[in-house]
Amino acid sequence: MPNIVVSYPKSEGASFDADYYRDTHIPLAERTWAPHGLSGADILWPADDAQPFAAMVVLAFESDAAIDAAMGDPGTAEVMGDVPRFTNIQPTIYRTA
Image 1: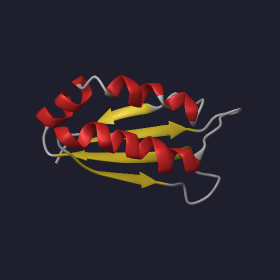
Image 2: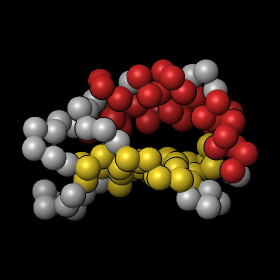
Image 3: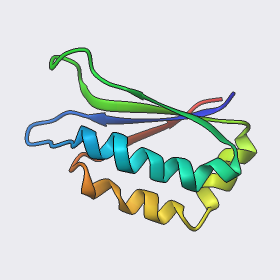
């Protein structure tokens, strides 16, 4: 099953609102992309402050075509535009096979 893994690497001066991310941003992504085959969004929280990421999420899709359809949805601009509301970190996006 193909995934998109989004990570938020920590750096000096970085901020990350975990509550907003969990309660608002991820549900927005789920509402936007579920019609295209998003089957799950698993947030990975760091075990301690020594970890290099503020958070990661694994977005599971039914197929590569589902990812392409989701990324082409007009609502994707809203999902991406929401990022500055919870962090000043530039996310790293990794697509898996």
